Length: 334
Figure 1 (cartoon, helix red, strand yellow):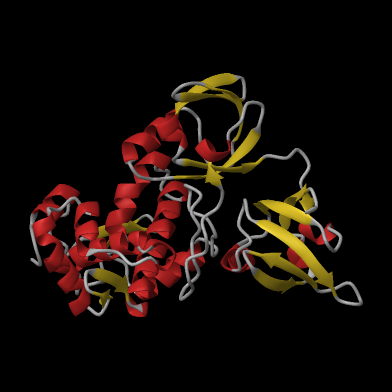
Figure 2 (cartoon, rainbow, N blue to C red):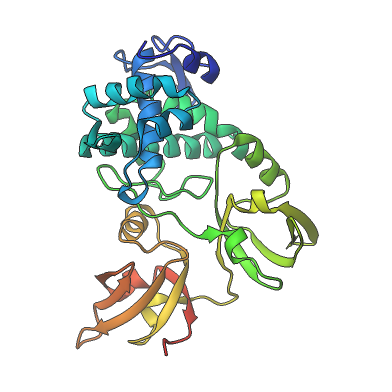
């Protein structure tokens, strides 16, 4: 072990050798004989470091240890293990960054996790709030070849069942969709849930029990001292401010329009993607995620392609590609 056996015990991992999984409803042996306790621990630490390294921010080894629930005394051991694996480096005394190799492996693990979550919901019928732990186990077991087969079997999906983006193989992680309900809720506003945090699992269970899940429209009725009151269909649902911070939404408009129909100079907010498979993933990777604001910059002399600005980048799309994005028009800038 690299630092401490409590992690495996706490996480419910037994021996990682000769594990078995259900794939395609068949009970099969794991085909990753190189998987060890040490490797699983390292990959847990890598994902935690990736989460800390938000938008390129460096992190401290103590910060990583605490995020994993370990005492500060183990921080240096964890950091040195990541460095020895080639997944991290010390950018300056006390500050750490993931290497390109480390970031790529972290994204691959996240991709595997999210594909497994979708598989478990769609193919095995597991409840939305029950898949995270099982997917967490399977992400370490699957080989790259099996991961590609799983992606193909599921039809190159762009979203996991919690509304998190599933990146394409070898690509960077697209930005997350939506803003937290706590940030945007005002009495009378209607929003559509696009994403739920899948941790802590206990909170996710409560959100699902209330009927809150991606694709559902809610109306904010009131903001009280420590909770929101939401209308969900015919029901009024109380939601604490703390819980609302784990629900991510976009504005719900009754009649969104295809982005390709906007005039040059128009501003809009993306509400929904109606493409599928690789096209939808490509749109997400370019920054066209629900909640993002776009501006139509120009169009070619014959009307196609059109150029859009999204997240400080100018991107050209064919009109038929742009029409797979449904948007809400925004007032022009003064």
